[in-house]
Image (cartoon, rainbow, N blue to C red; front, side, top):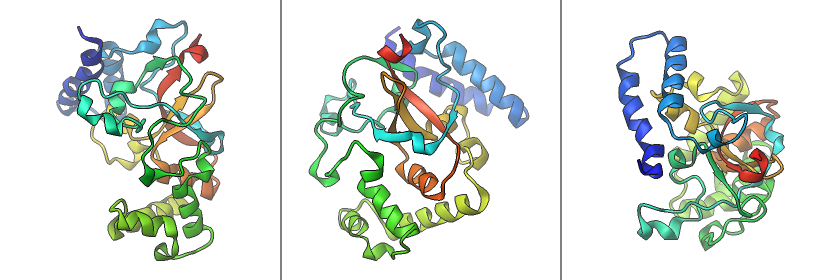
Length: 239
């Protein structure tokens, strides 16, 4: 079977099976995880003592300091190459993958002007600085240049900003919850993939991939531990 197909096919199969399993939530999670482990194609399994790509790991958000330089390679649709800098694209096909190269040491290539400057340091990203202005410096959204620019470009709307406010207040009041606890997704893999996404570099460093608002809020609130989903691990780290 084509390896790319083998990576993506299990989700559709098991999502169907998940909807047919009339079992309590705790038992359901155990059974779904077992099914994914058996049917999935995971490159990490080629190595000794492989990690389980289907398990979220709990980490100190302050340990996530750098942004991954990995790019998305659009195998199935070359016309999407202009978006290939986005490491969060096609997450299901990267889960459990192992890659060599220098992607863990640099910024991603071909980041468009609209997202510049694009720092390797997470705390220097415009989005994090904007949330610091909002929740630490108590500025209105319409006073923050990054947000004003994002609204002009259609990346932010009033409703989206309201959701970020609501998310901040929820985490501040009730603590940080996993996607299983939040209950927004009905399938096991959906919950795992929608945790904060990271890659692991050659020396074990955690490199941010996706869900920047949640990570930024966790850092601002001084949360001690958050669940993250590791997508890609550097070959040197596993070796």
